[in-house]
Amino acid sequence: MSNPTVLAPGASAFAAFARPGADLPDFEHIRRLANQVVPFGSFVGVEVTEVDAEHAVVEIPDRPELTNQMGTVHAGAQFLAADIAGACAFVGATAVRIADVAWLVVRDSWSSFRRPATGIVRAVATIEERGARRVLAARPGERVELDGKAQLYDASGAAVATFRFAYVAELVAAPADGARS
Image (cartoon, rainbow, N blue to C red):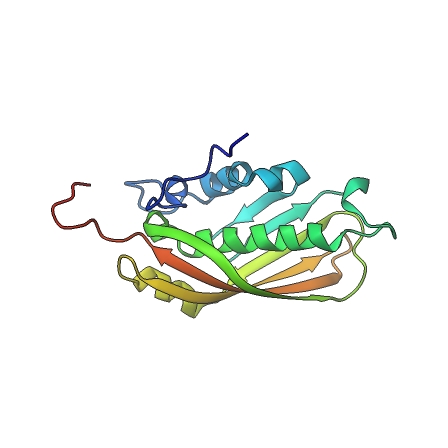
């Protein structure tokens, strides 16, 4: 079975998040769509609960199948939530130009687990402002490196983990001479 959200080469992986003609980004549209476009996130049950220009929040549900043999939230579930939150923070931070972004990938990541996570876990992610500004100013076809961070908290609000991401984004290339848009 194939993923219906996989895009054609040269297309923007993020165009669906844009609202052409809108004066302001539609963050609620971005949040709703983000909950649909990552099949693995839907399968696991993580949910994007907030997206704006400054951050994104993703929740890991309190389900026994997302725990490890010690009954705490599995590190893989925590990484997934941090990864999706980081991508959503990127979309929120670059929303005014998101249709021009061809793709975003994690080039490197780092994690620090502070304490065992139990119950519902929230991942709160941000993208470095300088990197977002570089994406917003980039030329067609240009690649931009930027960093992001996700802090994870348990239901009591205690910090349970920190993830840092090094991303690479590429803007959609300009059409070839003579090509029609």
